[in-house]
Length: 287
Ligand code: SAM
Image: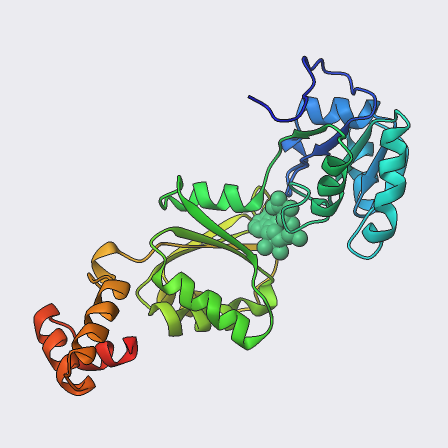
């Protein structure tokens, strides 16, 4: 049961007061859907990341409509006027330069605000680089982790690399071509050069390229060339067998119990390490 009212039926014409989130191609303009074109043609106005980019798409399909700019620099100021338009009965479409709005693109805050004001939000799905690369990679794809662009700060980056190194799920990352070598080296440090990886470059475009298998192989492929274009990276999860077959909280409790009972840390660790076939230092770390 829905907790808030939803529209009872959806015809193909935009409805008054509805915010449409419209997915657009990530390179190949033929990937636009008929529904997306229809909405872009018939809404009251289109909020877009870069009006020049959206104009190119619209002129390719002989569509014209009112465009307003909505990007990471002005979204904070524009949200309230877009909401006012929606409240006033206008229909609004949101597009980004490429792919799904709100996925590492502007849109998230507008959608949150629209929902808070009980405005209907309808997503017209379209291509997304993360999903396209994931499926093309052939890696497990029903349970995955999307990290988007990694943070720049070393400490925050390392936290994510540590998480990836231990994650059994497939992970997807967006990265700029200028930073791909640095990223691959960092991944190697945390996951080892043998971890499987799949780099998709220029998806859906003329020079689409897929490079795999291990981090070591991908690194040596890209290392001595100028990497250009857009890149999405898919990293295979860590094999189950590689993850320690012990339960940290339980082990930590056992360790504390032994120490409380009078054993020294060293003796308790030695006992537990032997019992669980682990190294003593690993048990020390728990304490
Ligand atoms: N909202 C977009 C989506 O749905 O995919 C993503 C926008 S984000 C600002 C741009 C990043 O997505 C690029 O830096 C790249 O990592 C990835 N990307 C976008 N288009 C791509 C393509 N054609 N091939 C590979 N990666 C792409």
